[in-house]
Image (cartoon, rainbow, N blue to C red):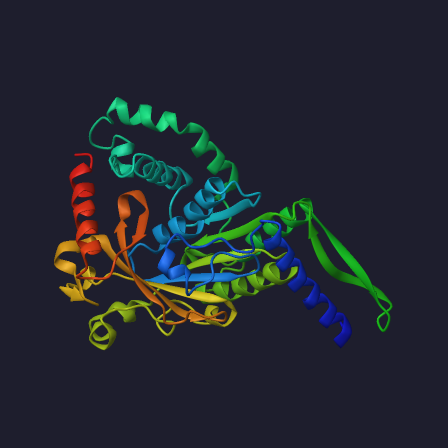
Length: 365
């Protein structure tokens, strides 16, 4: 156990270290891809546990991919950062092939500046043959896609908390050194500071979604979620790893009575299977679709125009400021794409509406 001086010295050294990193042109956080939102909510950092919640089929997994993974990757590439992003993605719901196809669709859209709009169903020639020019366009971005896949590891064969924890501890041991210190009163060596081989590595653990966890003893989902949450705290505190858990809202939250109460907006109280995750997370985000609830106007936005192409992102809770922040986003589910919408009723919004109409017209038929 550290005494007061040791604790003070460790914290002050960390403050100095983070300050020096900025002076050297390094970063301590990666801003979210939403500029206005990032003014109030600190971006992706080491040693944080994040949570995204929403009702079924609202797009929480797509937001997780866009906001945490695609955005971080693009920010590192565009700014030529030395940050080494390593994502351990436990895909409990969708296959790795589907997730990679989604990234390819995102790549086509962003690299073509919105002129190529192809969803995974079309990309995989499910109903009609994919035009050769689309395949040629993907090949142009082969290096970009392969570099992304070198940073993002999709894991399909581990679905229980201890298996995930064991996998991540093995990774930590293979990619860093655990220092120890002697405790006089116990006459023993105990773990002290973990030193990664690459100080610029940012490890992000993604679990999508936690209601699909299995428990090694066959116990219920709620107990599996509690176990996972405790492991994520250990991984954060010991190794500096960050985590993102995706959690559905309880069915009661989206029931008729729930809609009467709050129009189906996500809440911490509405977390499904176990609300205890809220005790361990650093910041939680809610995603909401007014169109799903047949609302014609919301926060000044004309939902009749946007239809299913609008979402509202809010900070439900935070240990680090920004709680209550809410923004409107343009959303295209087929390409895992989100971007901030201008304030309603402004000339900027009208320009955005024109762009959205063009995107709809560019959708591969």
